[in-house]
Length: 172
Image (cartoon, rainbow, N blue to C red; front, side, top):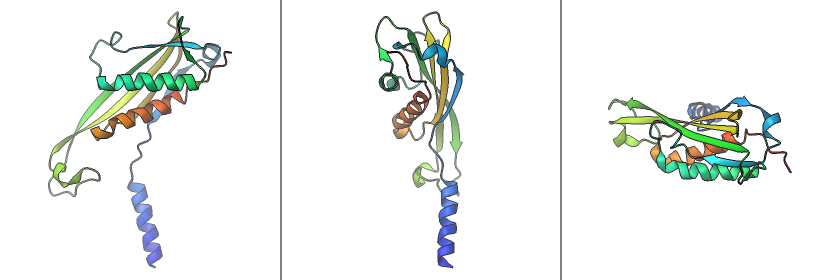
């Protein structure tokens, strides 16, 4: 009987656990046009976007991870570039409010549970275009960015999950 109670408790706890895996979606893919190309250039988001970028300190990390992952997929960061890689991170915030008489949620602690908190979700977008501006591949990856001290790791996981969807280069 105790074993059944332990198993049921573990199953209940597992079903309540939240997944931090990013949700990726490829919105446009043209592997026939992308795979023969090899050289790429990262395009910083600041000159392209009209609004100030969210998490500006994350962009050097994003550029580094994108470059590394594309190189692992057979692409090479070199001039003259055949592929322009555009990337940007959009952040959406939502206020969370907890009543004092409710039990605090996990990872927040009792002190923070009586305050108004901000829950942030990040959407990383990556677009690969040729020199004519035609989209060769485009995808998004959504992930939570809360709590703030885990946001760098969560952005990294979202970037890795998204770049894994890019077709590998077949160019010699």
